[in-house]
Length: 407
Image 1 (cartoon, rainbow, N blue to C red):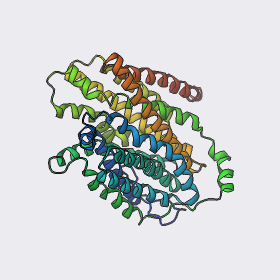
Image 2: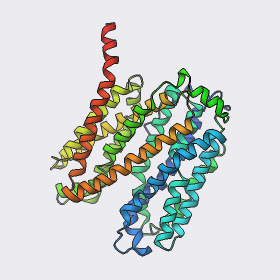
Image 3: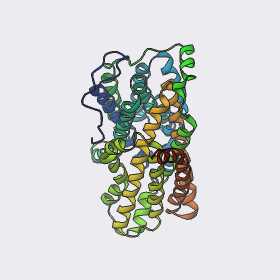
Image 4: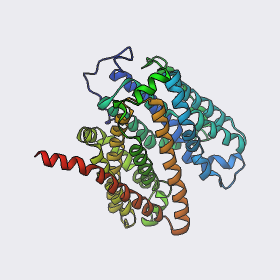
C-alpha cells in the first residue's frame, strides 16, 4: 500500500524502551487489514444472508448492519482500560480471538436470533481499532505514532475497497452466510502473527499512570479531538448508505461496476495520497483538519448537483481529498493527545466516539432519505462539515497570527 510511510532507518526493537521496528509495525498493519477485511466484507451481503435465516424481505438488514458497530463502541472503553492494566498485546490478541469466535458462531447460526447474537459478540469481543492503536501508542510517539496510525487507516481503507469484491467473487461457490466460517481463519491467523510480537510496554500502576496523565506531557486537549472525530465520521459516513441509490437515480443506465468504483474513489484517494499528506501537515494538523472539512463540505454539496458521470467522479475525488486530510490530521492529533496518557483508555474512548458518529450518521441518513430522498443525507453531511470547518479554522487563527507577527 502506498500509505507506508515508516522511515527506513527505524531500528528494530525488542523492548518497550526502544519501541517497535518498521517490520513489526507493518506486521501489526497486516493483522489490522485481515481483521478489517473480514468485518467489512460481509455486512454488505446481509440482504442475501437474512432470507435463509427466516427474514425473507431482509427487513432487519439495516439494524443488523450497525449492531457490531454499536457494541464495538460500547465495549471499547472497557477493553482499553483493561489493556492499560494487563497489557496491550494481551488485549489485542483477545480482540482477534474474539472476532474468530464470533465469525464461527455467525457462520454456524441457523436462526435470526442466533445470528444477531453472533453480531453482538463480534462487536463487543472485537474492537481491533482501539486495541491496535493502544498497542502502537504504548511503543511509539510523535510522528512515528501518527505515521503508524495513518498506516492503520490505510489498512482499513484497503479492506473496505477489496473485501466486498472478494466476497462477491466467492459467492457463486460459497454462500455469503457460510463465508463467515471461512473468514474466521483471518483473525485467527492474525492472532498467531501477533503472538510473535513483543509487549511494547509493561502495565503501569494506577498511581503512576494518574501521575503521568496529570503532568505537563498530557496537556493536549482530548475534547477537541473527540469532537472533530465525531463530526468527521458523521459527515463522511452519512453519504455511504444511499450512495448507490443516488448514483443510479442521477446516472440512468449506470452499471454496478461503475457505481462500485464511485463508492471506492474516496478510499482509493486515501491510499494514494495519505503518505504525502502526512508529510505536509504533520506540524499543522488543525490547518489540515480545517481544509479537510472544507473539502468534505464541497464534495458532499457537489453530490446534490452531480447529474453526469464526470461531475460525479469529480465530487467523489473532492470528498476523497477531504477524507485523506481529515483522517491523516486526526491521526496526528491523536498521537499528540496520547502523549502522557494511558493509550488503551484514550483510544477506547476515541473508538466509542467514532462509532457514535457512524451510528448517528446511519440514523440521520435513514430519516433524511425516507423523508426527502436520496440527496438529503449529503445535505445534512454538508452542514455538519461546514460547521466543523469554521470551528477548525478558528483554532488555527492564533497560530497563524503568531507566525505572521514573527515575520
